[in-house]
Amino acid sequence: MSPPGPPVLPVALFFGVMAVGALVVCGLVRRTMRGAGSAALTAASSFSREVPESQPGALARPHLSPGGRIALMFTCIAAVLGVTLTAATLASLAASPLPVAVALLAPLLFDVAFVVLALKLRRDYLLVKRGTLTTGKVVGYAFGSSGYSVLAYYDFPDAQGAVRRGSSFLSNYTNASAYLKTALGSGAEVFYLAAKPERNGLKLGLWWSL
Image 1 (cartoon, rainbow, N blue to C red):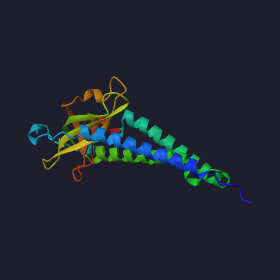
Image 2 (image 1 turned 45 degrees about the horizontal axis):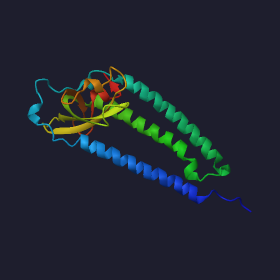
Image 3 (image 1 turned 45 degrees about the vertical axis):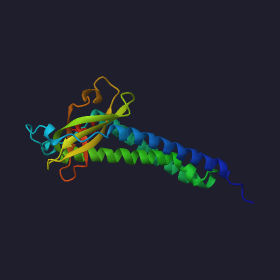
């Protein structure tokens, strides 16, 4: 006679609470972001053309910024923990009383964290290496002025003269943080790909620098 499986109700309740909580958090975040980034685009005439755009990545090799070094450390930790926990979980699934979805939840979190961090590192590297550097203007912040990071919204002119809006996370936990250097309405350097201006980022918020 096979041993009884885990109760279905607690497992379903667990995932139900997690799903509802995630939806509530996502809704609050989207509402905050929508309010901060809803201002009208800055007029193209507001941007000075006295300083020409440049492609500094062609002249120097990007290196990790202080924030990038911290991000790389967490990326490596997430990779090691993800591989270790995934292998251990897969090896013990036959003897585990938990459903497969629950057992794989912990290693999945580390695997997802690794992928997200690695993609961000690659994206920022390409922006600094191949991107065009121009001057934009900070137009809004989401999540207020407290916490460990804030989402900054900014406008910048692309190579065709069109004004675009982007967003970048800036650190907010030291006296020298990028956030404190970018008050609303102030100018800020922006990297963007000329062929894909929607791929952009504030220079102060990138994990690579020159």
